[in-house]
Amino acid sequence: MKEFGHILDNRVLLVAVIACLLAQFLKLFFELVKNRQLNFHLLVESGGMPSSHSALVTALAAGIGQTVGWSSTEFALATIFAVIVMYDAAGVRRAAGDQARVLNQIIELFEDHQFTEDRLKEILGHTPFQVLVGSILGVIVAWVGSFAY
Image 1 (cartoon, rainbow, N blue to C red):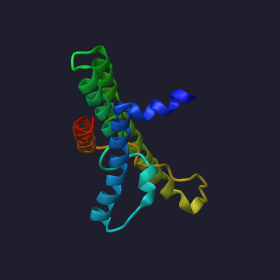
Image 2 (cartoon, one colour; image 1 turned 90 degrees about the vertical axis):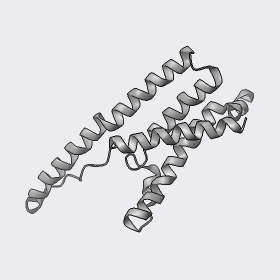
Image 3 (cartoon, rainbow, N blue to C red; image 1 turned 45 degrees about the horizontal axis):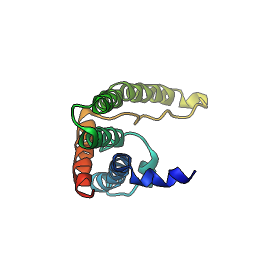
């Protein structure tokens, strides 16, 4: 258990977590600009601008590249992992959100029939632009973090 205290010495982990948290807090800012309201639920929800998943995995990959080397196996693994996560965010999860939207519209047609199912969550994934912004944020956080050590 004594070794757990050294987790804060892991620069790559810290950079990735900071990038993810920063992306989540930026969602509040973008919501405030776009809709003139603060929605604190965005801090714990998936979807939205920017993609915190993309920020996390690109900061992780960039941090590994900076620390271990750009030609390392670890960087290659982290990069492939990042690509899969970002593809999933903009592809599979976004398609699931689109399907939820259609199903919710069908449920609305039957509201007079006391259809008791809850609405499905529609914002599950990201647009490619949200993924791109999240990944740029992750690289920037990793780059800035490299000056801290």
